[in-house]
Image (tube, rainbow over all chains, first blue to last red; front, side):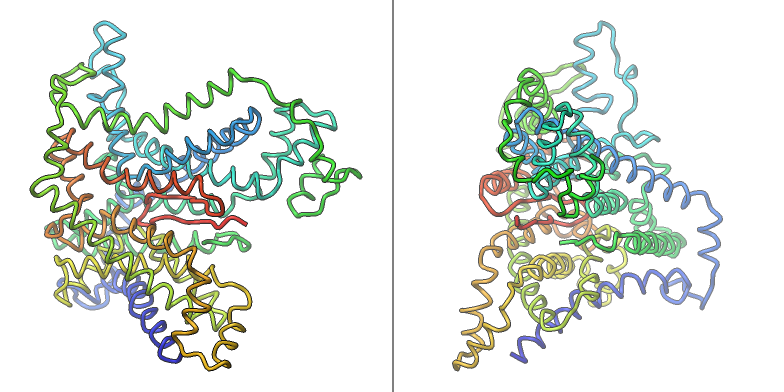
Length: 279
Length: 302
């Protein structure tokens, strides 16, 4: 028993505590000039350089913006699908369709968006068949664009199934249907009952999911790598590309970005609703 | 009505005197109808969530996609032939082997950790498990690369395996930590009081408690490795080739058919399993696939 417990604690230390502490600690110490090939003692130079540059702020704003828009779009679509499925009594079929969508990994979803929505993709090809004289340049840039539409689309494509399935589960668990039925019996219309009774009940239960979607979208990497623009870049792409460049000058900067990224994650973790249970 | 909603969410029903049980007897036919709109909803969802699979299949079987062709010049199975031969097949098998190893190790590690913590109220410590699950794998790998380079594990299979195990074990510890059945500790004490060894405790208490969850935990921790790109590309430094690595190489090279075949090979096992789970009572998959290296969050139905 003691051996088993000791093994668990050792594994906990080696596989979870050490890597987590290392990640955060190494990024912070490197950014302060205390580690690395260019270390010259404690300095705030890299922080000053990063904070005074526009690259960091553009990336941070872009990441937070993309995460917020994608999360909101997923929640709205998920709620609409869940309510409509209940209204028309097609929950089972909708559940199967959402499950099929949920099986699409993010990187594969991003590849699909690339193949469908890029200027040489299937969507402009369809338009070219329908509209005479339609050229690739006539199609708006939805991929690798400065507004990150492609990233949002990929996040939405993979996020809505999750949201829809989760909300369908909550609809059953919280017996929302019973309250909606009661509202209808009291005279509310079918849609009104669902929108005024069902939706508020669901909204009260999506705190944890919203938080997870926000963090996941903020941390997204594969989709921005394929669908994002070169400038500004999402935070994770900026950090990884700065660290991987040949210029050693960029490395401390990448760890400043990483430290700030961890700081935002901690802030989001603190913001996590107290009663929310993850996992 | 607003009071009723608030009360309902707290489990106290105050619908102006109406008993909630009365709702069950309501004739649902009053709200049915709109069959045409239901069809529109299903077709719309099908277009958005099912069509991508057919797009991938269509892209994978053809070659020669000059603008503005919607169908390829040649429909052949060359991409699929190549997918099961040479370096592609090797990457597929290597990725599968790595996933299997990560899955087994992570599940075993997660089980041990969750049992060690279950004796204490490790609530705060459990929050630590979420850090690897929420951090972008590319950022995590960037920070861990130097550690592994010092240990001479960067650019090796062992290095990638270990880092993926960090993520897999965190997931398994969270997942199996929630599987603790009430009264388990008393049953353990009973087995020991009856002279049972540690093995007997595992056989009669621990494994039966988690038995139903183990396949799902194994599968989801395998997914963390199977669908990982960030950790493998940074820690593996291009020397560790998995199917996901091949997919990104093929996308960069513009080899659309090959990339589509790889994408389908990556996703099909997932599709089969989640569809099986969808029809299996008791377990609901919240999120298969991966967002930030997290293989999935699984909710046990109440």
